Length: 373
Image (cartoon, rainbow, N blue to C red; front, side):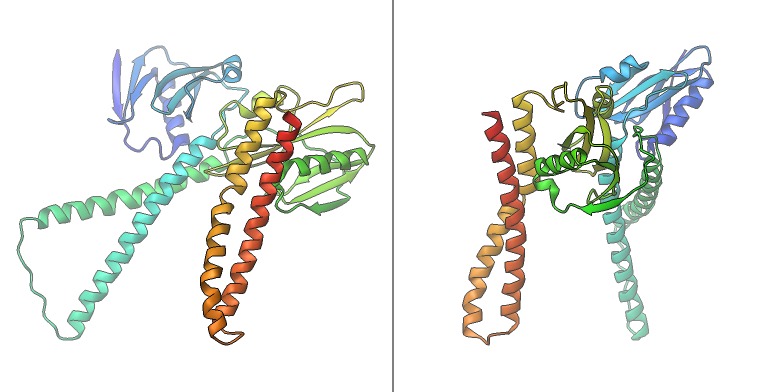
């Protein structure tokens, strides 16, 4: 027997939807498909059996091999949403980064609309109150469109706050969801060093960390922002480091590299970009391991870093140089230390900073290109 169930806000709280699907499986209803436009889930009646469901949001149209090998199966795919299932308890969890990034964008959109509604309602309330307090009069004008306006207002004031709250609660759950485990050392921390703006020259960071390992300083911990590096003292060893930049990580990204012996030391993910620092120990008899061995991937990665990290600052640098030239004439006509002078000083500092980021990123690409060709 087949049945369909309407669930309108299923994507706003993925974990709650997964738990709902697992409850249905224990009742003997197993997911066979869903329609993202009509918001309906389709089930097939069978013998009750415990299973684990996970919702995936992917830009690629393939199911990760590492998840398939660990027992996960793709149940259905609609647009970028994929529903996967594991019989019983799973020993390997898929990533939720893409789901969180997608819902974060929706959350900010609904939050902006909600703030606009609050400001509009407050403004209207203040105007109405001002009219009554000033002994003014208000005239009600009948209109056939009032019913439409009231219906639209009630819909917005119901849908927007509920969606904002549901997305916020769902994102909080995703923060504490299982993530790929990272092996941690138990050695005491001896000292820490700061590395600022390393994203614009990741090869410098890799070389510095490898040199520290050769001196006997082992990397134990990286701060949440990736700026502070804590070390312990030990025996010198050979470790290959790789700072990998991705616009978005796929479901099998961490498992793919961890299965090859790479250890995740740091991961920073946002809605637009993701940095991961990998480390792999090797011996003198072994060739230095590379996260990406072929020249095509190396150059492609360097180009991606240059465009996304430093390329965005180049237009801003040119813009601020143009603003400085426009303000220069006003400064020469006025007093020496007037407002225009300090504005030019501020703009000059911004040009130096943004220009430094751009040049540093383009030099990184040039260094990688020289090693490839």
